[in-house]
Amino acid sequence: MAAAAAEEKSRGKYSASCITMVVILLGLPLWWKTTETYRASLPYSQINELDILLLDISVPVEVVFARGTLTAEQQKKLLPQTQFSQKMNQLDGKTGFKYRYEKTYRAATGLEQDAIMGENVEAAVDTLSRVYESSAGSVVIYVVPADSQLLPQEVSVYIGKHRAAFLRSPVTGSHSVEDVLQDIDDNVEEILQTMSFTDDMVVAALSNRVPSGMFSTDTFRDSMTAFKSSLGYEITFSLLNPDPKSHNVCWDIERAVNNYVQPFLDKLSFIANFSVDSQVLYYAVLGVTPRFDKASSSFSLNEDSLPHVINPVEAKLGSSVASSYPVLNFLLYVPEYSHSPLYIRDSHGSPVESNAFHSSRWGGIMIYNVDHQQLNETQLPVSVNVDMTQVMEVFLSQLRLLLGIQKVQPLPESLVQNPGNMIVTDWETDRLLWIRTVENIATATNTLTSLAQLLDEIGNIVINDNIASEVYNAVASVQRSLEELEAGRLFPAFLASKEAITSSEKAFFDPSLLHLLYFPDDQKFAIYIPLFLPMCVPIVLSLLKTGKDLKWRKKVD
Image (tube, rainbow, N blue to C red; front, side, top):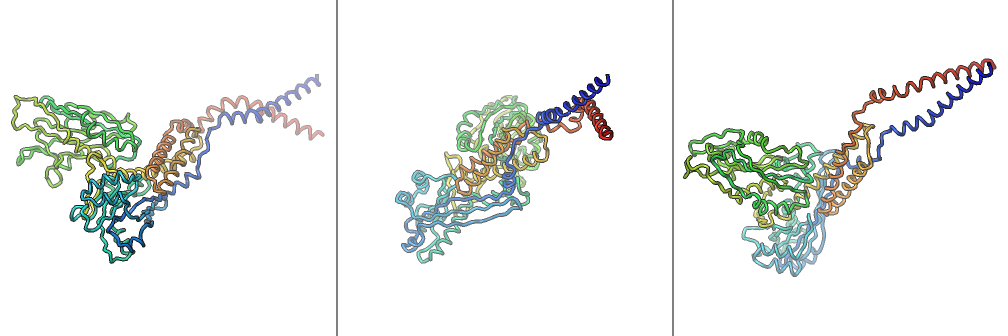
């Protein structure tokens, strides 16, 4: 009996030891592996490097001298050659930019000379655009003789609708080469500020990374007017008819969009995706009661009351919450019979010529009056055919501002060619590309830095392989965009920046990042204690008893 009891006791100790070894060597590692949070590796060091952003922008410029602008001696010393002019702007400890103009001086080719020798500058612009195919971001400046008949009188600078400008030569044959370069460069840099970008424009594009106090007043206003860079925009045209009993309004919006808006959007299709829709809203009135002006027998809306117009109207436009892209609203408002005619007045009390206004990062409203002078109430409702040419001129002007195509301040003694059927000039498109590229880089680096900080601080967020892939792609795209900017290749730089912001936002807003965010430690204990405690108590007691027996045996021995 004693031997059997001793054998049973020994078997119990052996079993407890085996179970303990299985739990320690197999159970705990298996539990740890199956319950750990999967976190794919991320390029934290590269993201930290991008947190300090110093843009290096290169603008390729060609200065082409026509025959008669330089003496033979000047031409021999000056042409051809390349010079660089550079400027740096450090905004704060982590953000800055520098840009340089890579100016190449050369003589005009035979085909270029033939175009310049004419007397029609617009024809010269078209001819040179076919002869010389320029890349996005580049600028060509043709220096013509002081007595050239190509430019209109009293015009020293003519900026064409492509990427070429004409400069009347400010030099004479007695000047040295250094004086020639100095006089030319002063005018060239003024032209480049118009056709490429300015310091204030770049600072505004970096607004996500710098304090707003660094903007000039005009630049800050322009930057706040335009929508932020986005992969797409939704444009909605709405006809508001608050008094359908008096007005039977007809507008051919489909034809107007195809003739006026779509060509403009096609020019910008590589920047973002655009969708256009329209609607007609009845009994939609303004949220402000117009004031009657006895002197003009009309109603008016003052400049101060315009902000109060938008909110009541916006509630009837349909919610834009479901849209994944920013919505640009353009409203055509036909005043009711009792408030006609209705005019918008500026701060000086004068009627606004377009009878329209726009709201920053929202859209625009135009008031379209109906002539009731020859009508009486018995002839209502009156049929109204909207002049869509007049309306679209206003809406296109507002659309340009809201998409970031800023108004250019003309240089002294300068003339800017009207884009005509092009809707938007090539250099205006380039200006938009410069700003969108910088804005995309700034936004992508901010997003990556915030994501890395979030994932570093909260250790129980799952980082899947697809998120890591997007982060790596975003980092590589930002670096590639910076390299392309430094090389002066604007369009590839923009495409890379667009890819960077797409990947960074996909990673940042991935739903799986929040899967374990709200799973605190106290909930873990509440789950694991009822599971492991009943199993661990017998094992621990057996180990304690085994330890006591071993200690007693040592004392006996």
